[in-house]
Each structure stands twice: as structure tokens, then as C-alpha cells.
Image (tube, rainbow, N blue to C red):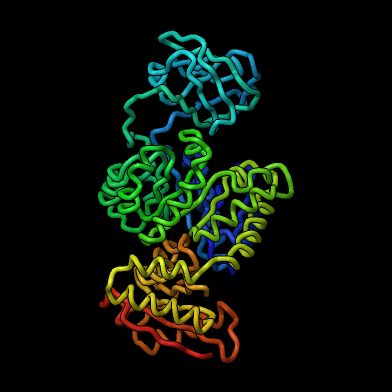
Length: 471
């Protein structure tokens, strides 16, 4: 049972209900829907399928919605794509046209105004590069520097284009309202550059009276790195979105930034996610490269909460195989995690309150006693998140009567949440915890578990007990 969670983006290769089912059965924790490429009808269809499968399989796979954000992207092409060839010319036009190899449009046409001659424009996370050779008030003329296929809704990075794009536009507001209506669990915000961006979205959720959706900040530019501490402070988690980040900053800086973000999130008790090209070779082949396997393993050993598949499961030929490979690599890498070191790091920055001190004691005891599980009855999920921060070597079984709480824990390292009945007595907490642990882990006689939480559950807002049980 792996502790590092897996997010998979759903797209053309994985829309079939049977494919989604296979992904769920093979270790998928969170389904991601990217609004840069998916419309509302597509999202509704996938969310309904996931909800049906959750009931059918008695699972709690969560939903993440990824916003478009203030990013320049291509508009539509004839048949969805165009083949660009090196040395040929292509126009980027302000007028909205259906694109082809000769000309295409972008979603923020005024961005053209700030571009200078000889600027290098990077398409689709830098897969294709163009050089501006001529310019008018209505279009740019660009020389294609390398062969490639450009598709609908792909990123366009214009290094010299400095325009003031508001973080939230009307489309973003509608997207947040849609997320609220569909009761999604996570909202991943693209191109966050400051804590104010996150607070703007949070204000909208407050207006909608939604206290369930967790906000994940995607770090994709230099400004976000500069403001990282404040961004972590006001968000529920951070995604290292290496695609756009690798276009904005030198590639050689990304590994260090990734480690920095994972560490800071861990010390602050926030979720960390590593995304982009983890298994990109498996879009077309049956096996990953050795470098990809090492990449995933290093993120896991560093203590990341979750890793994400994008193209591998949206347009790749082998979405289920890619997820199975991810699961295998995680399982092997977790054997090399230094749980004692992660526990020590977390304790050095922990508040000196009862929840933190008990959580630390529980994790330490679990490691020393080689406990098979830590069971955490919880209403809000707070105690389970705190336990996750201390990175115990055994799984954390969170039990809650609230399905929203159960799904909100889908990204936390080592936490496996299950819905249960209301707890109306301490005896019931203990009996239910033991019963659920036996069912969940197939425990044997003399196995040890540790039960921890706050009692009475609805009255106490902090952890106030731990109990060691031997089966």
C-alpha cells in the first residue's frame, strides 16, 4: 500500500468508464480535469462516471479541477492541430481564426503588442520555438525554429511581452462557480504569482459558502518562487508545475526548486505535488526511461505528497500501464524514505500544542513499535493531516462520518480515508477503529495499531488521546 498519492489527468485516452475504472483499481487517488482543454460538459461526464465508480467500487477517488489562469494559449486549429516545419513562416494574428500551418490565434491578442523583433516564442512548454522576424499592429511573422505539432489550447510563452493580465477574469469566476456546483475537492490555480491571487479565489469560495474545496497553488513562474513562503501560507498545497516553470526559468534550476518546495510544504504542513513529464516516454512506449524512474523515486524519497500524470493519461497510448508503472516505482522508492529524518524535521517546526505533541508521539511510537497502522477518527480531517506531516512509516487510516472530509484527505501522504457512522461514545471509537483497521489491512493476531484523535469528536477541536491496541 503506497503512501505517495497519484493524480491522473483525464483526456481522450481515458474518458471511457472502463479505463477510469482500471485507473482507480490500480492506485489512482485523484482525477484531474484541466479546464484549459476540457469544457464543462466533458467535466460533468467524467465527474458523474467517477461518482458512479466510487459507489460501485466502494472507493473515494477525489476530483481536482485545474483553472486556466492568466496564461497565453493557442486557440483552435483545423482538426485540432497543425504541423509546423523548421524554416517556414507562421503568423500569430490578433483576429480570431481557425489555425493552420500558416497562421493561428491566441486567447490574449493584446499580448502581441509587447513583443519585439527577434523575440523567441515558445509553444507547448517549449516543445516548439518561433523567432519573430516581422511585426505589424495586427500580427507577428515568425520563423519556425524546429519541427513540431501545435494543438488547441497549448501554452504560448512570449518572453518580451509584459502586459498586465488580471489574475481572475470572468471565465475564472465561472470556473470557480462550476467547481462549487460540481462539489469538486481540489481547485488547482494556474499561474499564481502572489498570495493575493489565492485570497481572491478564497473570497469567491466564501461568497459561495464553500468551505470544502482545497486550493492548490501551481508554481509556474519566477514571481511565484519569490513569493513562495506567503503562497504556501495561504494555500492548502503547492504543485511544482515543471512544464511552464521550465519555460519561464532555466531548466537546470528546476530540481533545486522542486526540493525546496517539497521541503517547505512539509515543514508548513501543506500538500506538495510534483507534475509534468514524470513518465512522458510512456505516451508512446511500454517502458519508461531510467531517468524518469529516477525522477519519480527522488521526489518520493524527498517526501512529496503526490505525483501527477498529464499527457501520459490524456493522450498517451497506455494510460493504465503508465499508472501501474508509477505505482511500482513509488512502492520501491518508499522503501528508501528516511522516516526518522522527516519526523525530526517536522517536530523542529511544530507548534507546542496538544495536537502536534500527541501526533509526534504517535508517529514516533508507531515507528518504534512497528505498528501496522495509525487510526484517526476525525470530523474535519485536521488530526489526520497533522499525522501525515510527521510521515510515520505505517499507513494512516482516517475515519470520518463526513464524505467531504474523506475526499479532502485524498492528497495527504500516507492517509487512507474511509466513511464511517457517527461516533457517539469513546467505546464505539475504539471498537470501530479496530474493526476498520482489521478489514482495511487484514491484520493478524498480535499486530499493533495506534488510535488517536480528539474526544468528544464534535466538541473538541484538537487531538487529546492516543491508545495502543494489540489485535
